[in-house]
Amino acid sequence: MGLSRMLSRVAQGLRSGLKGRVAAPVTGAFRNSFTVVEEATPRLNRCELYVPGTQAKIIPKAAKSKADVVVMDLEDSVAAGEKETARKNVIHALKEVDFGNKTVAVRINGLYSHHMYKDVVEIIEQAGERCDVFIVPMVGTDKDVYMADALVSQVETAVGRKKKLGFGLIIEATMGMMNIHAIAGASKRNESLHFGVADYAASTKSRTTNIGGPNRYYGVLTDQDGDKPRDFFWGDPWHYAMSRIVVAARANGLRPVDGPFGDIADPDGYKAQCFRGAALGMEGKWAIHPSQVAIANEVFSPGEAEVAQAKRVLEAMETAQREGLGAVSLDGKLVDIASIKQADAIVKKAEAIAAM
Image 1 (cartoon, rainbow, N blue to C red):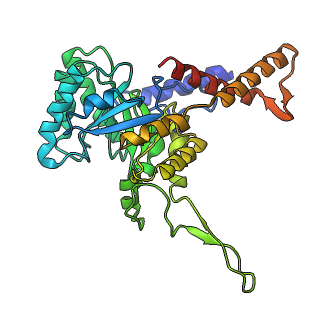
Image 2: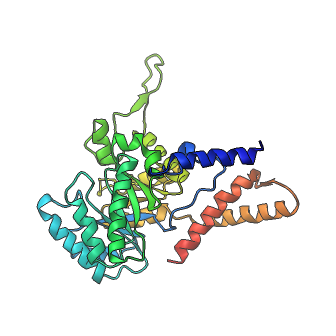
Image 3: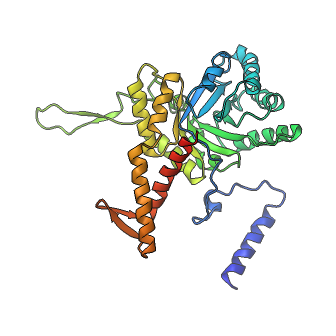
């Protein structure tokens, strides 16, 4: 039996075994390493400005900000007794406020909350189609995504919504971190994974009350050397979690987005956190105060020199390929096919920013 025929029979057997069941997402072991990953809806995502849904007067100001994404929040920043008011404010804003070409998102309440279904139903039924993305908090398993997807799909169908809502999923607990790859591939609505650092710290019982940022106790001493003083080097307690989010997101064609930095009086600290996230592969970062927007935009935008160098790499590789070469030296550094992907991403992001 030929290989192609054998693979066909295996696939047929798998399909037969799945009759009457919900098909598993094509991730992990179900996807071959050479499968082309479908990218999520392309959006600029350098900065996400969060606005409490209770602050109706601030929403139009956020719409005029330089943030790529405006997120109107119905969850953590809204007290239990204000949920109804916040939802009405958000629906009004979605119908009346001019957000220009920004991505407009709403952080709904989580599946743990009885407010969640009303957020979904009332926004889709009453607010038209201006909302682009639902930010879903406290995602713990792929089944959470399935449930949210099913509810959104039902309401969209009922009202005849033409534009399909996307999902931004917040990973902010140990269960979500353990199941992150299944979560990332659980729905075609998925667009981004976000790091909810504060709840994640609580979930791991980390000894901190800060929202993001370093921890002065997390570090190492240099070796003893007689009576000489020893240096203490700070570590990054969130490196593992952030790296895991980046890998899961990129492997599934999603955007990884870093979460909040709570010390709004420390712009230098916020900027350092932005640089750290960008170095790891994060697409952008939350802003919980307007003063953070310009910083995130600056850090997550490729600079002029970076774009110019990326274009030089593309030109060098184009010349190399015409000459039948797979790699060349540019300024004394190796440039190969992988360099094309890196350079192309930089140039395309610069073009998207210029088009804003």
